[in-house]
Image 1 (spheres, helix red, strand yellow):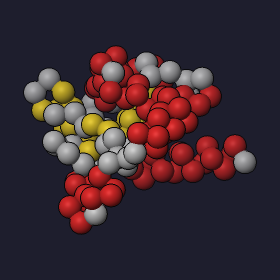
Image 2 (cartoon, rainbow, N blue to C red):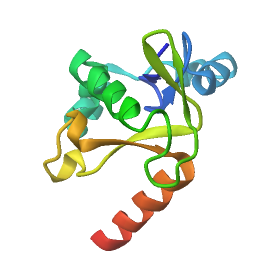
Image 3 (cartoon, rainbow, N blue to C red):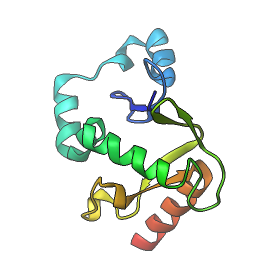
Image 4 (cartoon, helix red, strand yellow):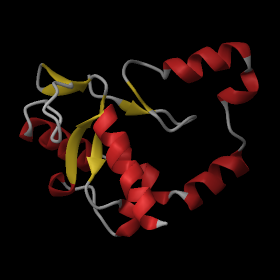
Amino acid sequence: MPSSMCPICGKPYLGASCPRCKRVSRSSRSHSKRSQSQEKARKQTNPWRSEYSRKEYKNARQIAIQRTNGRCAACGKVCAKRRGSSWLLSGAGVHHIRPLSQGGGNGADNLVLLCVSCHNRIDAARRAAER
């Protein structure tokens, strides 16, 4: 089962619902739903978020994971396992080589599998360079 993006916190998760928000929503119902105006503002501010649920992106993501055979492209750590016809991530994310905010796309040629530590390191370096 591929990971999904949580509509509440925007982070990827495996399974039927986000474990972080499920935990929070049990104790605080106010977190479980955004108001319509908040959701509209979020979509206008981040229009690219809707792309993550499209079939084309999900297919490109699987191709990017397959390309490295489930290993981090930077350090080689195994961070995805094959389950049936798709890959399941474990401690990893698919990284945009050229960010969407800088005109990059969601095609497989712009995606690469990175473990969490490599992904964080590369994103931190990119943010530092943008300052």
